Each structure stands twice: as structure tokens, then as C-alpha cells.
Image (cartoon, rainbow, N blue to C red; front, side, top):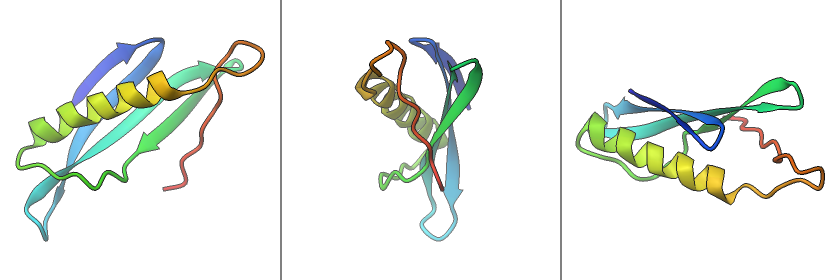
Length: 86
């Protein structure tokens, strides 16, 4: 598991083993402060699989950084809150 801070966000990346394929899928959670509360986003729908958990985790970190970098600012200067329903 990799846990790090990136642009005021907490990124936690892990790998989930897909038993039927014998490969690892990245599982990512991103947390940040939003309107005096903590908001979370889960990125668990990656179609990319890896032979090792370490490779899945590293890809998960890059996926999370891209997600953080791509979030549009709200008109009040804060960031939008995206919800995941997975």
C-alpha cells in the first residue's frame, strides 16, 4: 500500500488481486477537505491489470495524481466534489 499527500489531497493506492485472472487491479482512494468536511473519491474501475501489486499501486498513484490535476475549480475558488457510487 502507498499513502502520500499530493496538492492538499491524501492518496491511498493499493492492489486488489483478481483471482480468476491471477493479476492485480489498482484500488485508489483520494481524500481532501471540502467545505469544513472531509470528502473522498474512489477510483476502482481501472481496466488495466498488473502482474504485481507494486505495479498496480504505482499506476494507482499516477491515476490519482491525474484525477487531482484534472479537477476543475469552483467559482468560489475551491474544488468541486465528485462522488463515487461503486
